[in-house]
Amino acid sequence: MRGGNLQAARWLALLVPAVLMLGALGSQYLGGLYPCEMCHWQRWPHYAAIVLAMLSFLVARTSARVALVLLAGVAIAASGAIGVFHAGVEYGWWQGITGCATPFSGGGGNMLDAIMKAPVIRCDVPQWTLAGISLAGFNAIFSLAGALGIFVLAGKRA
Image (cartoon, rainbow, N blue to C red; front, side, top):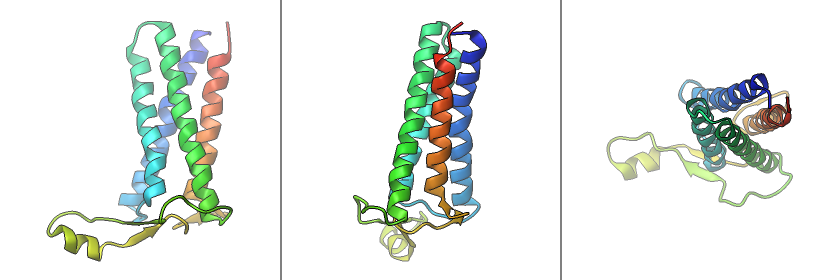
């Protein structure tokens, strides 16, 4: 693998999940769009991918870098696959595997009071769409495209 391709794959493996997480957290904390249970499922692989990609910049051996980048790509693809499933639930293509409602806890004070006052976030109703695509749909598109880009770059040989 050429150094330039590996470098590009490493940066893609770091930036794709970081940008998607910034968007998710920004929409939550700045936009008031609280995540449902399935939204949280999509976040965990991105967190793992960020850590794996960061580690790829710290290790010296090329084989370790490649392995970490590929693992980050797999994690990003997993988030995309969960996004496809979540979008399908939102669009009514299939049933979700949860009750599709998560109370969002604002924190602090009496926990029972906070739970009772918290909004219920449904997994089967998109909170926001653009051109008919929900946030789960956008996560699926960008995650799967990013993972494909990582795998293509990682597969290029010198």
